[in-house]
Amino acid sequence: MRLTVLAALCALALPLRAAPPPDLQPVPDIPPPPGIVDADLEPQVTITQRGEDRVEEFRIKGRLYLIKVTPSHGKPYFLLDPKGNGQFVRHDDLSPNFQVPMWVILEF
Image (tube, rainbow, N blue to C red; front, side):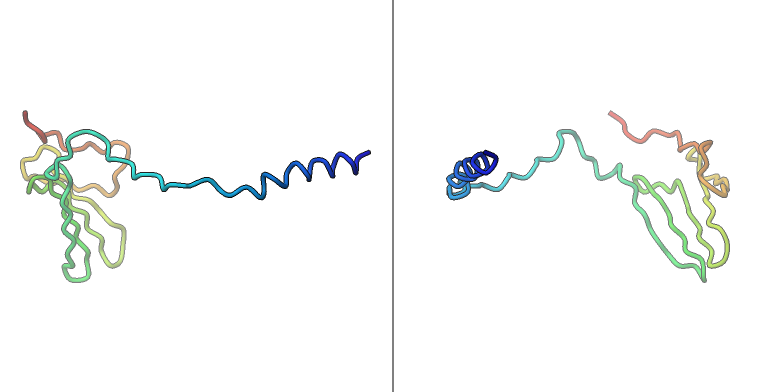
């Protein structure tokens, strides 16, 4: 009995296997999300070597707000301008207490 059921199922599956594949079309590319993309709001990063130290400077609209210094020996540290007045404060890490600069980035 089992052999008869198995043979019947195989016989039903043969036409499905022999059928030609449907005409497949490639999926179109996904369009970018709507909204305004302002290149001026992207941080500009400048990486330089000063002696054996690696210095990364982060700017928005040409204004320097963060410097990351990675010495050849030792732990990296950060210099942050919290008020945007050019007075940098040293931080040994960007802990949860880290505050981003609070000046105007976008004006309408």
